[in-house]
Amino acid sequence: MENTISTTNTLVPEGFDFKMVNLLNLTKSYISDTVKMATKSVTEGHYDPIKALVYAKKGQELFTQLEKSIRPIAEDQQKLSKGEVYSVHNADVSQKESGVKYDFSTCDDREYNELKEKHESISADLKVREEFLKRVNKDLEVVDTETGESYTIHPPVRSGKMGLTISIKP
View 1 (spheres, helix red, strand yellow):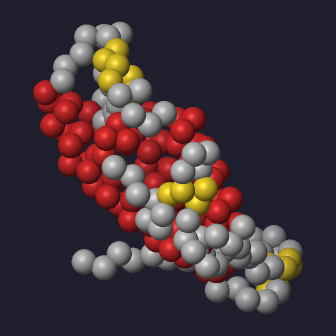
View 2 (cartoon, helix red, strand yellow):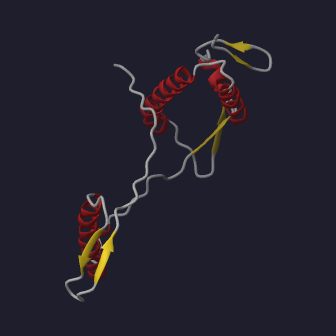
View 3 (cartoon, rainbow, N blue to C red):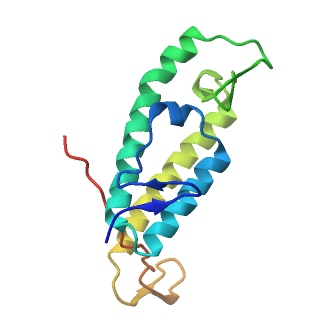
């Protein structure tokens, strides 16, 4: 089985050979079309799904690290006015406030502090109870010590999905 995908005009060989110049000119619709074509190629058996997944994971890792490394430099060097949009390579770049956080501990608000304390206490109690319930693997008859009423605790429903994990070697 040859690992190729068909595009409208050309064949893209194994590795989906993208070049940096091409990446700068991509549009959302081109990206979407490419993903559809690659997915179709995999589902029709023309390209190995594991290879495609590893390729996507490595690309994701490359671009995640690249963006994380370059973003602070670009944000430091490129200051835009409020509402200003810098258009380059089929992309619009604008400046906005992100990651807004509030520190309420400095407010000295008694009501907030009491609620926060109750919340933390209840959250801790809930976590302890959840850990107990995780260990319940069959119906458990219990008696409420306050009311004397008996009831049944059922095991929690565990859900999950088997999937693939990809570790890129150093």
